[in-house]
Image (tube, rainbow, N blue to C red):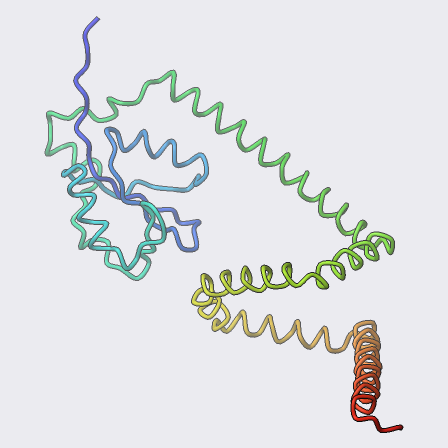
Length: 245
């Protein structure tokens, strides 16, 4: 049995047309086409745009060059970038110039068949999971409509709100989450289609008679509570001053 020499690592550029932000992937591999097969498990329309030599050093240089377009890991949003300026060669051109490399030498036929089987099982699993998600959504809707469940949740929330430690922790967590995501929310909410969707949703909520009645009842409850607090505070102030009402 002869030991095959390890293939030199090449830098690859892949494109995922289905992604919203993670559109391009720059990484290294001994066999980029084998890596493409792995990527197509969760990005079935991904394509291998080009290759270039350089290994880890070239990969790090490209990542540093495109750091302002980075989304996470090896993924970049290069929709507004001239990808051709990066100097990647097509697959056929790359291997034609480097006859010492064997194209596809890292792909084993048995492993390819195994990947196809795993890909089919993965899509069957996703189909089952999607059906499970729909069933769970229907269960949650029915459970949320149960008056007993809603009263129990309201009671639990009221108990939490009366705990100063819980309120302080909740405010701290909300503030942390806001600080971490405020730029993304600002960019998202500035899109015209999102503004229109928010406006139509607010108009729909404002015209809902059930919501109007609920808001009126809440406002009445607040007024009565504030009046009761004012009466107690006034009685206490008169008592401290020794003046009869």
